[in-house]
Image (cartoon, rainbow, N blue to C red; front, side, top):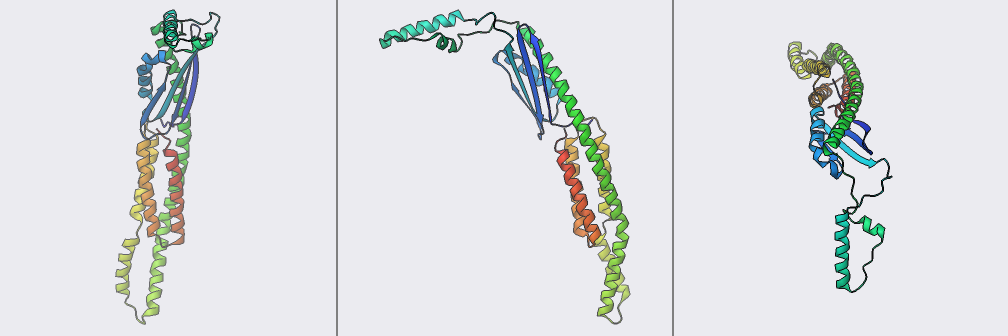
Length: 287
């Protein structure tokens, strides 16, 4: 199934009096890149979070942000008594050395690192809650990527259909172009020579036709279009393969344009390149 690389998902969960929040953002990227932003107390579970994301997302830049906050503060602040005693002892030593009072307000004391501490919570229980939350958010993210992927698939399929129409028009136009070119050359030689050598003219026309023949380019173009449609139906990630096919389609369209000596053929080549560029922009966002 085609998946977009752009999506967002967010979920909350409660554990004890803590509210956990998880946000997942993914954008297009050439490779797979996972970034995690977790509170210090959740660092032990970071490896599990990365493994969960890497298992389901093979391409794209994914940012995972997890935060937690206490639902209420009825129990008041929990003060680390050992850290507080150490701070006051250090302040006393400084006071003696400076021969001046080193006074702190209560809020200043609380602002020192380590003075306030969170109530202990079972680490294994916290890990299970975080993993469950990330799984739920990841499921929402993947669902969004799949929905947008279906839209991208539809857009690319429609453009492939238009390209097939233009390729058929070019193939139908080719005999007309060659006939017009042949007549143009006949008229030119007739003007230049009273008795033209039509046998030699035919030889020249054969050589010119070989140089201007776009049948092979049309064959390859139609083959690449069919391959794009086939790849769109595959279940594994196909973004890189589609990107390669866009390059090949563009190569054939450029060749058609360079060989064209007819206004309608030139216009067909232009329309093909416009469609290919539109598809290329869409393909850049496919996993």
